[in-house]
Structures are given as C-alpha cells and as structure tokens.
Length: 164
Image (cartoon, rainbow, N blue to C red; front, side, top):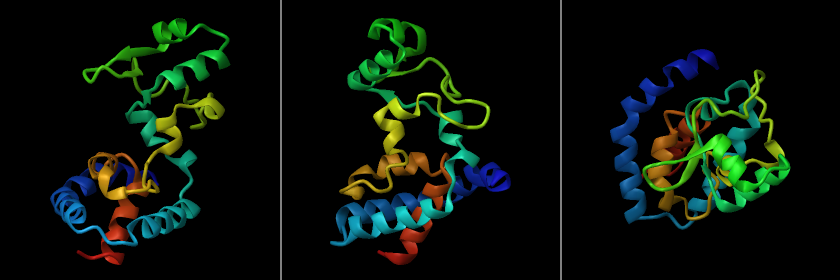
C-alpha cells in the first residue's frame, strides 16, 4: 500500500486528461445502469481495501463541516457549537467550515478516527463512489483520485466495464 500510495499522485496526474474526457462523455451520455455498476464497483473495491492501512484522506484533506455536523460533534464533546468552531474550525474561501489544519485533528496514530461515530457527513460518504447520480459528482471524483487509492482503482475498473 505504501508504494502505491506514494506513486498515486503521479499515476493520477498521468491519467487526469483521460479521466476528465471520460467523465465529460459520461455526463453527456449517461448509461442507464451507471448507479448500479458504481455500487457494484464500490462494494467490490471496499471488500479488498482497508482504509485503516491508508487514511490518506484524513492526512491530506479536510472535510466540510455542516451545521448538523458541528452540533453533533460539539454535543459529543459536551461543548457549545461555537466552542468547537473556535477550537477546531475555520471558514474557507467558499465560506464553508473546514478544519484549521491537516492532518485531521481527530486521526490517531493507528489511523483510527477518534470521533468515528459522530464524524462529519463528508467523512461518512467519502470517497462518494457509491453515490446516486454518480455522473453529477465527476469533479469531486477527479479530485479524489490522487488522494484515495480505492477511488483510483474504481475509476480504472469503471472505464474497463463501461467504455464510452
């Protein structure tokens, strides 16, 4: 995993134009069974992939925190939402709440999330490869390919299974 993870940004960069063209075609001509195939590819990949051996998403990027996330997590810490915000979050250029810094404050040395049961929605749904109407999130998927080895493999398999 370490070697693949180390090479992932280069692999993703080499495939970026090909993937972008593929996703552009996918938006124009979406196969009827796309969501079904994506669910199948996602499930198959995550039977083989253990996120605890990687946690690259937690180490290199931070999730968006919705109001519901902030309320749920601050309650977990027995804090007022504003205390949680002041302690852990900042507002980014899109006016969204994000972590003050990465790697994630809540990631421990063994790649476990210390707030797993109350983690943000963005973390629960990452890498979004099993979302309905998958063709609508191609920009997110393109951003996740250099970060998540599973996303890289899912997209490569997707291109084989559904050539456009």
